[in-house]
Length: 285
Ligand SMILES: Cc1cc2nc3c(=O)[nH]c(=O)nc-3n(C[C@H](O)[C@H](O)[C@H](O)COP(=O)(O)OP(=O)(O)OC[C@H]3O[C@@H](n4cnc5c(N)ncnc54)[C@H](O)[C@@H]3O)c2cc1C
Ligand code: FES
Image 1 (cartoon, rainbow, N blue to C red):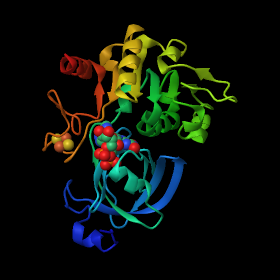
Image 2 (image 1 turned 90 degrees about the vertical axis):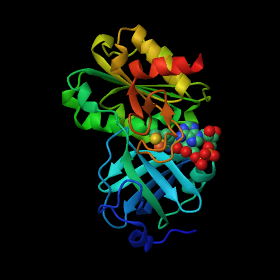
Image 3 (image 1 turned 45 degrees about the horizontal axis):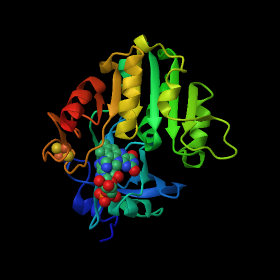
Image 4 (image 1 turned 120 degrees about the horizontal axis):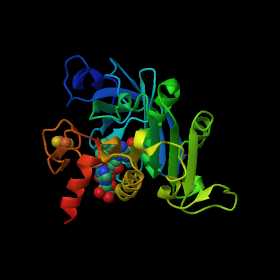
């Protein structure tokens, strides 16, 4: 089934439609970042959804194919920016969308990064691979509100130099923040760090005792990064991670995303390591 503009009327709009009703958006830009990763900019056909916060996510829907949670990658006025990696049926179809195509969007959902908590402190941002997507709008906000934070350091770990997302954006971050990038496997022209992201955490200039750390990446990377940051003196409640779980309703009703006592769609996806660590440890016993 193809989605048309008319569905905006028959499926719903933001006016009292409720959080389970997708709002029709049109693709206004589609950029292939990497072979398997595409950034879509989507514009509401009718009323805009509430403005998402960094760290929150939307459910992107293609009728007859499915619906998946995708983080906010950026905002451009009322346009939503989402970066999507093609890993299966729904993300494949989303990555194939062209300018002018339609999709359903509902959201925003979940708890974001809550940057207000970091005001007046140092900030450490640790991104692994696709983890740079939900952290991107957070770094943009840190830069636009720079005077309200102490030392800000961004550490990015990636498989290889040619698979780094947003290279130009990362370069611009480095003009006002300490930015370190490391790769697992270097190319011949790579002059930067080689190794895992945790190796860079001892080199950054933030004060561990007075920092909030925002960490996103594969779960195993978040564990190593969180433990390294805590070992340096940051309390576990000041280390925030973003968890991924399969989702269905995104509003805390269906239980699909349950992790211990938490619903990741509602209590998360951003959670303090002090809440996440005991639950992950109990699950792996
Ligand atoms: C809060 C949240 C934010 C996300 N943000 C982004 C984003 O910004 N960009 C992006 O590309 N992806 C993001 N994801 C992951 C994305 O939702 C999954 O890749 C997508 O649901 C896969 O659907 P599919 O039908 O294409 O593939 P499927 O065939 O359903 O799955 C393909 C593979 O991915 C695994 N998988 C499926 N869903 C998830 C999931 N939710 N978490 C972890 N692994 C999963 C499956 O186990 C399988 O191995 C996010 C997930 C969550 C929960
Ligand atoms: S996705 Fe339904 S409870 Fe979280």
